[in-house]
Amino acid sequence: MSRRTTVLVTGTVLLLLFGVLGALLPVPYVAQVPGPTYNTLGDIDGTPIIELTGREPNDTSGNLNLTTVGIPQRPLTLVGAVKGWFDDEVTVVPREQVYPSDQSVEETQAQNRQAFLTSEQAARAAALGALDYPEKVVVQDLAKDSPSQGQLAAGDAIEAVNGVPTPDQDALTAALAAIPPGSTIAVDYTRTGAPGVATVTTAAAAEGSGSALGVVILQTPYAPFDVDIQVDDVGGPSAGLMLSLGIIDMVGDTDLTEGAVVAGTGTIDAAGTVGPIGGIPLKMVAARDIGAELFLVPSANCAEAVRNAQPGLPMARVATLDDALAALADLRAGQTPPSC
Image (cartoon, rainbow, N blue to C red; front, side):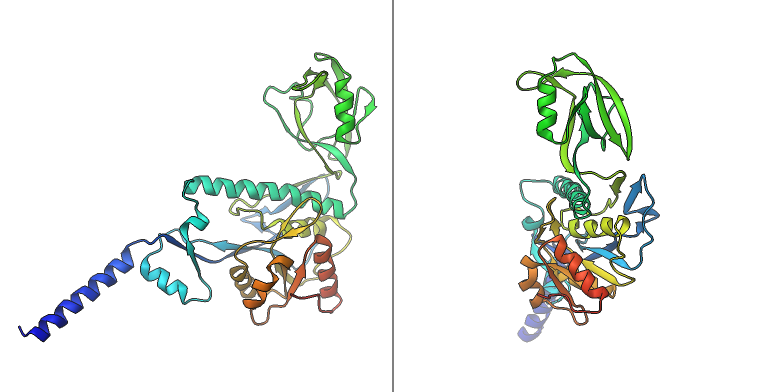
């Protein structure tokens, strides 16, 4: 075999070897792709994303889709990473950016899921606040071995303790501080719009003197119906804005979309402030693919959104829930909302 032939054969073998290794060996990166979108006015496999108890939802039209980022389950190889770097619809990022080295994948997923559950609570509060429902002291959970077990439940608004009105947390704290532990008291509450009276034998307060009901409470807007949100496959807080809009559309006085397909993203707090999120370029691709007529962009993400603008996908800049409602009003009126 000539030297030239030997070099060619060796080079071919090495090239094939590197190709095989590149296709099989994982690299410390992950690929992110446009994830599924979910219409907050609809359902997933027959289960409503937003479910109301205590009232019927409005007849709604159109879509208010939350958008997500997907991560393929298979480990990313060198060949896959190189392909991703040249694909406008794939983002390749260091694995540690998605799965911190000090956490397992399961721990990270659980953390993201908890962030989503927290965003549910904020979305509910922001929506009911925008609809002018009054703030009340609302039970969020019962402590272990709570003296209120079987008497109070999550979602109850505590109206009075032993006849003393409790319109806010300070009033409830003051009323319980004046009651000796072990006292049997009447707790007036409202549950899905119906009044009730619980009889509770109090425990000792964890701090200071007085009694405790053994409940976790939050001062938050309260409506005479329950709002339950079910999106099991989504993690992180970025769905908050679209969930708030979905609640408002289902219980408010206005058809927010009038049949239009609207998508968006953004965190939200109880006061209605919209915060930035990650993965906006991929979420915009997902919105484009479902034919969205408007994409709601957190104002802090506007510069990135403009750099990754999608043909035929108008954008609206939103810094608050009120901004988002105004953008939808512009869309209904045939006007152009403020863009990025």
